[in-house]
Amino acid sequence: MEDYHIKKIKKLVEQEYGYFVDSPTRKREVVEARGMYYTILKEFTSLSLAAIARTVGKNHATILYSLKNFKQWRKENKYLDLAYRNIVDKLSMLDEVDSFNDIKELRKELVRLKLENQNLKNIEQKKDSIEELIKDLPMDKVQEVKDRVKVMIQSYSWKYKDKVKVYQANATVL
Image 1 (cartoon, one colour):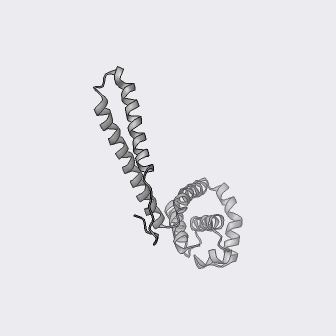
Image 2 (cartoon, helix red, strand yellow):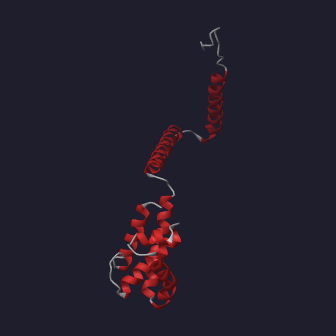
Image 3 (tube, helix red, strand yellow):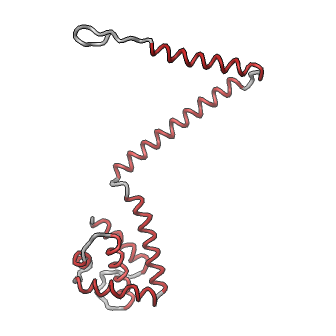
């Protein structure tokens, strides 16, 4: 897992619970915050216990002990449980964004959506201009106009179907 994701999780835990997880203290609140951090890393990443331990300068046995006790700590401390659930919810939302592999994909998607939006605006403008043309059309002439427009549209398709490609001996199109 990338360092970026680990740092993001560490920052979320620290912001939500209010303690630095790599602080060397043994205060209960900090120990619980570290336990939350270890549990989230274990659940949301494929890091080994040793790899998790390296992120805060601990050993794998410390991580194992904390993981073992974290469920009980959550039962005893409702604020810890609430903070844990808030972080899990935030990470779930981030997963949706992270499903795009990188910023290039997001930019491509943004460009595609902008083009689609522009096309829809153009269609809307064409629709408005056609509505402007026919707003004063008497109702008894509507069917006649529809029939004429259909014939015009068909004539455009016929026009392009009739083009025949002529090839010379050297395979260039005339």
